[in-house]
Image (cartoon, rainbow, N blue to C red):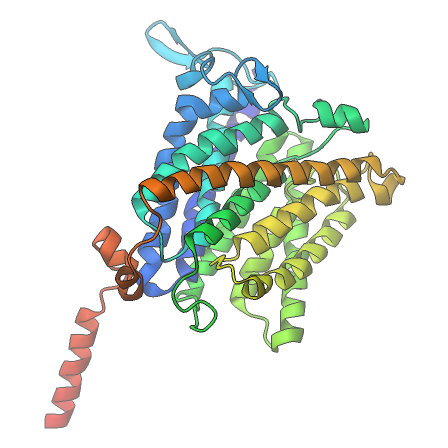
Length: 434
């Protein structure tokens, strides 16, 4: 066991965990003040529910024993971390080392759990201001087990979409998703699209102005996401090594150029380079580099960033033409960015890239992998969502949505302005008397 690798993977787990509070701030600032707490509570619920689901059966489905048709592993072989932990001299410890062989397997279970948590939290951005908190919690549990964990197995657990899976053997080159372009971003974005279509639009969508109520929150969330992404991509090297350092470097470069690309197009189209645009560009670049951070050159990383920044900016306007209320642009940023990033592996990979070696096989394979991931996520999310609609229901009442979901669902407000208003009225009366 390497203590250095162990320490780095524990730090990376903490960094990825930080991404969920970052999502809470990012999304919380993007909505109206009367829905801020509810938006942040959806991320809190993701942490609480997904961690339990992951330990219970998620880890086993993703990385457990025998693979079933390359789609999922035995749900019971590693249930409640069986096979991962052992009791030794009255103390629980790791039952062995990770697949890399340099740190305890318990660290792997923790690291992968944080990925599952943030994937679910991302979905919530499409449901702003209008869904029941209880229904969301139930959805998070079943989506983790039936959608996220199986796709993690397919891509990272030796399944259908993995580098040694059936599709890779068919195309003759290994598929590549370094840190979650398919498992996290495409998966979450497709789920967000399905839910947004099923739950329906907010009242006033397309006519009312749904402007961010707290732009500093948005920027804080974006910068914390960037910081957490160092663990997201750097930790996916599974060791304190040169690959981890290089992945962090390309992550920075792609986020920077994506921010510039987004702001450039925004300036041309609207006349302003906005802080919210900068935050969105950052996140789009981080998403775009995730599948390829270890296999593309610095120049390629910057090109990917520009491409993702421009295309994602243009993509977010499509929701209005389609009439789909993807409230906080999960599909436009994470979906489009995830698909572009996945395909860019095939275009820019140093070993099999179309633009670097002239080999088209990896590009075709990455396209197929993205399509399979989208199809699976859409189908499974729809099944879960329709069952919850028929049993618990998704929407809060129109009155709750219009007056503010925070107070109705959680009994508290984001900002208590009563005292401020009273103080202002007192000063006005004093001035009038004077």
